[in-house]
Length: 315
Image (cartoon, rainbow, N blue to C red):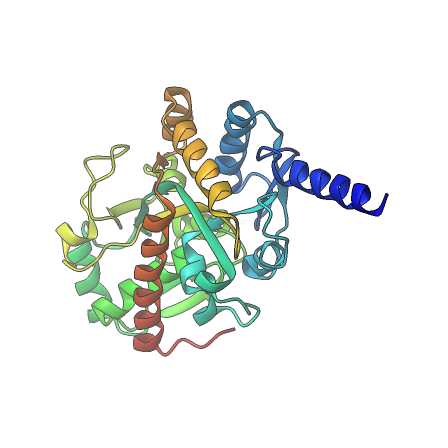
């Protein structure tokens, strides 16, 4: 009887491990609130993965502490493929800016696939006597300590863009902290703050009320091809897009990673998905897990240099 029991237990164990993945619902944690720039692509991808893989993929929002609450939750979750993270590009620089961050990005997470990319834009108060990036830089240098720029929290991608811009140009300016982008844009229009770098998608509807000088990516935006890039306009080394990806806890099984990465790639190739993304100013951009790892390694080095150049300390 003992031998039979052992054989039955072994057979049961093998049958459990042989179950196809996924065999139960999968949670995608978004470390910001509902309706945010990260929330939408996560929900669209979750919807398509549910259809493709035959199990429910659902989004759970866990905002707070600059994203570290949701990120840490996923980091500490079992690496069984049933808890994933919609990770923003800002995670590559989080440890340089956010004192709440305790993780090592590439040690504590498993890269699966990039999801989307998008452009940021330099916007200025329309009352300023400037029409282009070169003119704005010259004006700022002619008025040291007088111009103000808005920020919405250290370590977010708009913040890194502003740190890079200020560092490359050498302008002496004053930071004005805000809680959210809409507040900054309202004050840009009203002339209470002079400039900001924000998502192009959020600035285009306001283009008649504020002045958009350039986009932050290496290539021009399909949504606004008339806008020059920062590199074209004045700063040859400038290139800082926004992107998001799907990551899991460290030590996920390679076969689970492959299933997810392939399914995400299929979802992002669907015409209706690309159309939905384009309507809100983002571009579907899948990757292999290795490509995603290399992207984060690249940007960790860039953010580290920016932090060193501007003397940034975790807050």
